[in-house]
Image (cartoon, rainbow, N blue to C red; front, side, top):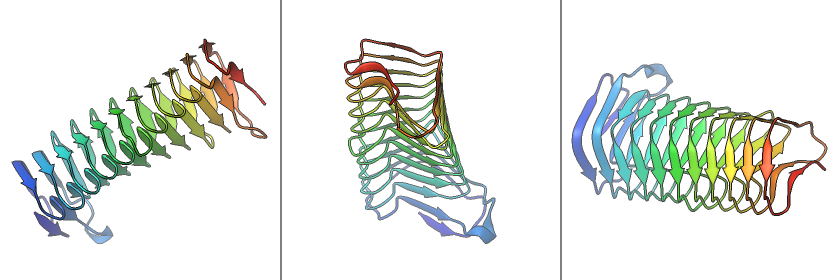
Length: 239
């Protein structure tokens, strides 16, 4: 199913499989506010993205076993969706909102967010990279566990009330003016939380292989009111 520079298309309640794109709704910058709606669709076994949708609402959909991304959704709202076993990111969002979604067993990031808001989502067993990758984004009330690399990787982002555990590297990595607040990071393969020119406050970090909280050198980090215990390398590393 494909349309370019159209408006108000609704695709509802079906299975789309075996194509290059399962669904492809693309609008350029001269055709913003398209008002598309994709609801109750299963997009599986397609050669690239399962669902590619700009300026759209994507809700109650499943995207799995696609060679590329499960759901690619710039300038869109993605709600109550599942993306699993895709070759690239489970869900890719740019200037979008992702809410109540689950991403697992994907080849790259579970959820990859640029200038977006990610809320009440779960990302686990994503083997290629991070559970949730956030650039200039807000991540709230999310869980990231058993991912191959970081649980949550944040650049210029805010991470609040999240849980990251049993990830292959850091539970949460915060780079360049990121803020991590009231989060829990336990049993990760490296540090519970790694901060690089960022703020970490009110977090609980325990039983990580590295430090509970570790900081990059020669940068200003603000680390306060955190609880750390039983981390193998030490509790808080302030070089």
